[in-house]
Length: 89
Length: 345
Image 1 (spheres, rainbow over the protein chains, first blue to last red):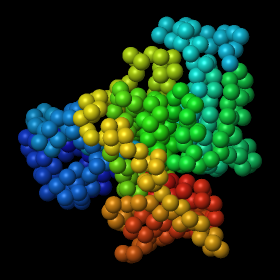
Image 2: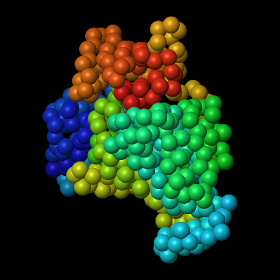
Image 3: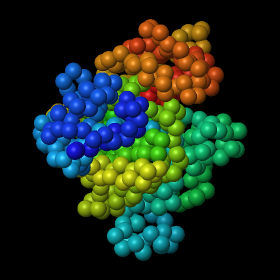
Image 4: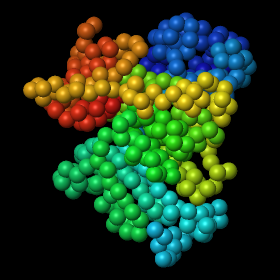
């Protein structure tokens, strides 16, 4: 199954897990599954049906915005990463 | 100003990709460093030693003891003397390299002064701790066509990207809007490790040397992510974002931050020893989440209307629209600093 990597700031909303195996063949399907299991996480990632504009999602190392956005296909061996903006310094 | 002898730089000139030609470009370069905290001190240290000819260090803040864990140019004596960070850094750097020009500017970077502060620089470096200033830097850099290098760190992890306007995605291509205040952790709420900052700032410094020496082919075209605690290093491919996303800044050339339409608005509350910081937000602050980040170091309480906590002699009253009243200061710059440290922006 594809693996979704959860960044540190969102782990309080994924039961502390840093990665979750989720069934699905597109980014949308993965996030639907993930959101059903962790509603608070969905709230952090989505505004209605749209990804929040400061949340970036990568399939392996590719940004889904230049692929097919949420319709981007995901293979069972792929890794999906949620990449937060990092403010400190 | 070219020193008579470049001998002091001999060890880096022997590195073939830089060479004497690259070194000559470095000593003739000018860099504007925005922010001189954890990232900024490491950056300034590297660039002054490497012989960047003119360095302008811009910072709004003063040194406190809890900075010394990671802000490598400062010491206890600087804290005792109540020195501004820019000035203390300049003094240290002049002792390290007397052959370069170092200018300390103690000011809050905002839309009224940024073009003047960075306008004559060959390169702008990000040593800030908040997105408000970074979006302002991004607007200024894209408008002026100047390269800049983003770096950000929290906990044990950090990110950096090199932005060459027109050739690479800009910060707003990557992150179209800043996370709302209170939505992301800050170094004050989530902590930060000095070595994590040093790693990211060192990557930024290498990129700076490449830009200034004209080694364009060697530049980083990815979003670099490092976690020094769990040993991860990733290069996310972002080059494809250029032109693909309808970027308000580098594609539409609308400079919302530079025009003052975005960012915080700060007011001193007369006679109350307090400052109000108002930030434009699209959605209500999540008090439970913000409280969760603060309760580790300060007592915090909240209801539907406000969240309140006190830290380091300042009482914060935060409202759902992102506005905050910070008691214990009349100083607008101090209040903006505290806001970005504890609420985030």
